[in-house]
Length: 248
Length: 162
Image 1: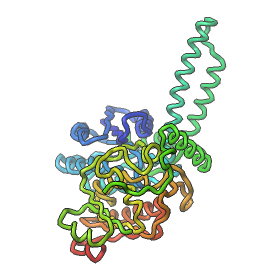
Image 2: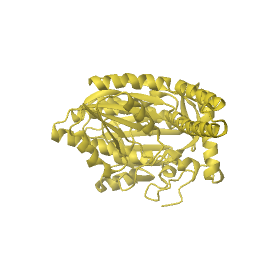
Image 3: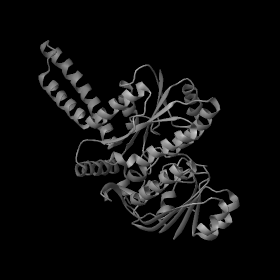
Image 4: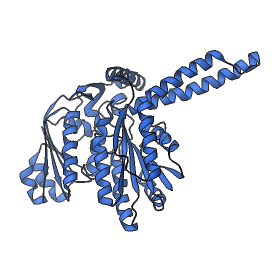
């Protein structure tokens, strides 16, 4: 069985869509191909991969309550390609949004369902993830923690001749527990969807989120954007002003 | 101020101009959003890409009445129209709040009175349902007092719907 995983984030790197796609891949067996969908130059290459695949998994961000425009352009092309070539593969979707409620991905899921009906494909369902950006940021923090742990083990080895860096291991264990907890809902539903992908069955639509209260999430999100806006200078350029058009 | 965003051909230009204060033609001659958030954090209400949509959010932000004319695509906006909307998130600010018991961004230009979405082209019942949900969600997200969606069976009905 061949499954094509499409990372449809417009970002070059460190995107939440890639993170969730990486997790989903862990729970699907057989031939696995991962593709990046950013520009029209990617279209033909991905369509060729789909020609002998049984399933495709899109991982994408929610933009203005629905599918980002660069993905819509690909879907139109994919519809024509699948009809021309008589393809009836199963389509699954992992959608993530910056708001905390995964349920906000519902219109996007329905657009995918309607797309499948138009293109003669099998709608396999999807997972909508709320707070995807924050889960992704913590993923990056966790990767840094792995680096710190390895460095500490190396220093301990040089200083004492032993690999046992107790404090560093304790700290790393704490971060591992936190990342597992925050991702519990996501992991549960991706493991579940992986089972349905392997069987070629419909998983239905499921919604989950980062496991923290929404008011805490909003506080962290606001702090995050304040820091970004200070670093990038937007805060000093009429940050919240009602800007008028200056161009015709 | 009434702004019309549309993906119609040049043959409709005169009609559209006559029905609004400002028209924005979604002709597809621009790049998609890169998801950088620069229109919030770096150069507020402005996109770093200096094409036709460089200040699209400022134009849409001025509208107390916004009309979108779009071809149906799977129960949502056409890719050309969606591209404009994706590039216009600077109408909100990076700060978050609760609206409709859910998290949304605060509004740079405040609440607006009306948003009407006029949909043309072949459409199924399921797609109509999706479109109604989408327009309702957009209304909540963008702080719109009244959101409407109109389905045209033919573009000859457009003038009356505008």
